[in-house]
Length: 494
Image (cartoon, rainbow, N blue to C red; front, side, top):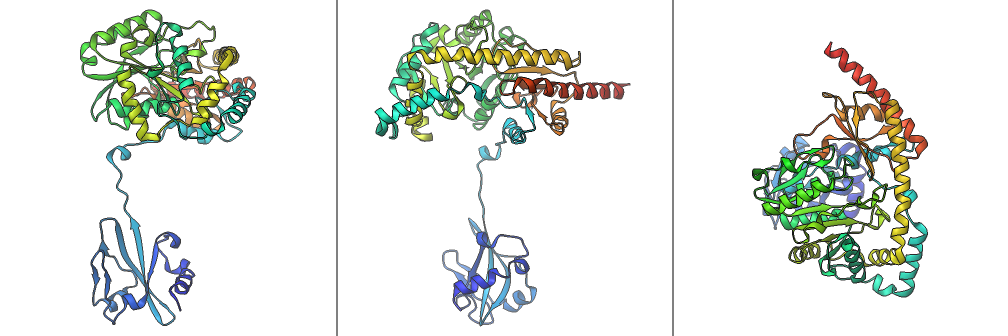
């Protein structure tokens, strides 16, 4: 009987022999008898690890299950049971590889939003959870046109490797567009990224050492906190109110030694707040005086319902700001295309970090986006997005007024995709979510958006992907749950 036959026969004993429940096709090995059973005294020699098991055959045979006999630098071998296969004896060894994760990897956690989105895949769930743009806004016909044009006119170049910095015509287009509110941006300052989320990762690699101070808003974008946390910074929370970042609350001690401050001045995720002009001016001046760079993340700036935009922080001090933008909210997120605008010295380091990460953003996606935005398409397309989002926002605000208890507070955003809700003190958005899911409604609790000292009596509602007829139903259910929770808290206090 050959070794393959013995392996096959041994595997047939799966349910009775492999009592440890380890899949045989993954981690069981056979050692043929003539290599391992030389005499009744068992001798096994693995040359590479100098493993020797001697003179214990009777003990092993009678005990059946035996503990570890060898532990090497990467494999753990355990003699489990001896089995007779025809005239030969074979030895079963469990082999488990030890993967030693880095401290950074051990500290990683899953995104709270991504975990909630798994629940929302059920069609019966009314989801106010994900920060996804509405698929009703995706310009499918325009993207089809752009794909056809690229494959017709430059198929080989579109399918080939490209420069790390990105497709030059697209970088020129980005530079011109970002310059419209007063900044003078050169294409050499633009880096095309694989989604703006990659930009956050690259900034972390370039700026953050373990223990580096990073200033973030309270609350802040969860994706940024996740991206930066991989590099183990010391987060310092900047105070915010209903209008966004409170510049007057920034003191010298807080600013001292900070690698950068990260903020979303336009319709912030998660709060939907927009920083007023006078605070923008004060923030830029305060950061410049302290020598702290500003990272301005602006995925929602184009989504002002009235079309009344405010100047970017970049435009107020181009030499001390890094600006991030995205095509996800104005075209489609599946393209995974964003960009970073930075002073050229910073740009060079970001390029080096991106070379190590993924060489470059896909050439095909870049060329498609470039063709799609030509001839003023984006300026004609964005008003339709604003109109749809404004309508759904108003639908939700009306439902909140109708169904939510008076003890609950929320804002009235002038753009973007989110409404921020504050519950009475002592309530927990996470506990409310568990009850809401039982009734097929989902949202995101506010606590994960805080870098330090989370406020658990908060939650984020996203309205843009929910049809208007379902918005009222979902808010009504949340209102009923809140009424019951508030009554229960009142009863407990009494």
